[in-house]
Structure formats: structure tokens, C-alpha cells
Image 1 (cartoon, one colour):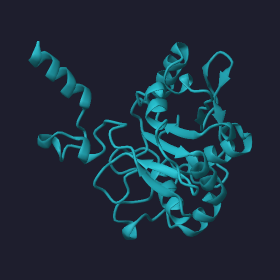
Image 2 (cartoon, rainbow, N blue to C red):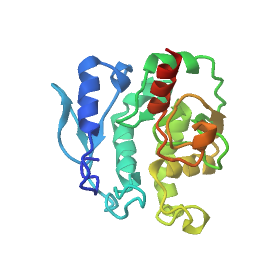
Image 3 (spheres, one colour):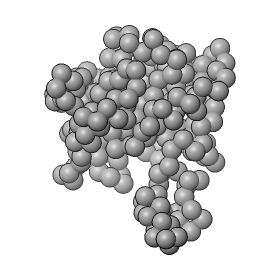
Length: 231
């Protein structure tokens, strides 16, 4: 989202443009797409896919911690656009990656090569020890799982109270990752595990013992400290 709802400068577009120039991150995949609420481009001949706020929910609520718009409405329209384009049908796996995530496709390809996928499809949780462990920086769907999401998301949007959220709104409205996970669960897609495929401060299980309650923990800072210590 380029209209993030906050005056804080974000660098998502610049990060994507840099990755596109180097053919890294998602641009190292066989197919890719970049979706936004505004027009723009990630590079010459690679325009952003502009999404319209067809349901009027791009700006209905902000996250308490960051003051930025909730992303569920935008992702819903992105999924519709992906479904209409149909390019995903040639893939065995579909991955959603945040613009500020460091993503190495070749490592994921190797990791997924040994995964057994049931007939009802599979999505891979990446945070251990929580009820809903599918965190949005890296979302991994098998082809059948993604097809199920596309086919059921409209009914889920009508029946899942995502604007209130789980447990009576205890955690606020659902982000797109939780909405998708609840929808996939409701439609019989299996949960799998991909713990260790991502590392950031959002998942408590990924943080060092002395940083368990620090949601702003930075793994890069820890790595730099370790390198300095061992030299």
C-alpha cells in the first residue's frame, strides 16, 4: 500500500525497485506480480497492478501498533486479480512475500521439493506455539490450497467476522494472513509446518530467550553482535 495511513516514510516501493533491478526476491521466481493501491512501476516494462477499492474496505481501520491501514481489503482484491489472470495455474506452489522481506526463491524451491501435499491442499505455518501461526511476511500455499482460497474467499468474507476479529475482537480486526488462514481452515485445507523458513521479530518462538517479549527484536542486530563478538 502506498497510502499506508501514516505520515511515516515507508520504502516498500523502493525496495521492490531495487530487487527488480537485480532480479532478486520474487523477481527470481518463474512468475510474479506486484499489487498496489496506486499506479507506479517496479521497473521499465513492469507496472504495478493497481487495485480498486471495490468493497470500500481499504481504509476502514488502522493497526493500533503502527497506525497503518489494515491490509485485508487490498489483499482480497489482489487475490481476485491473480485469479482472473490465471498465471498461477502453472505453478506447484504460490508464495506471498512482504515488500520488505529478504526472500531467496532458490532456497525455498529446495525446501519445498520434499514436501508431500495431500489432495485437499496444504499451507505452511511459519510461527510455532500459537493458535494461528501463519504470519504474513512469507505465506506458502500449495496450488490446491491457493485455488481453494480463490474459490471460497467471497463466502468467507460474507461469513467470517473479520472486521471484528477472532475471540470477539480481542486482537482487533483480522489482517490478511489471519483471514486467509481462517478461510483455508474452514474449507478443509491442511496445515503444514515450515518453521525456520523465516526469521523476524513478529514470532515469539523465533526470538532469543532474553528477547521473548520484545516484538521489535531485530535478528540482523543480533547477527552483527555475534559476528563482532567472535572475531
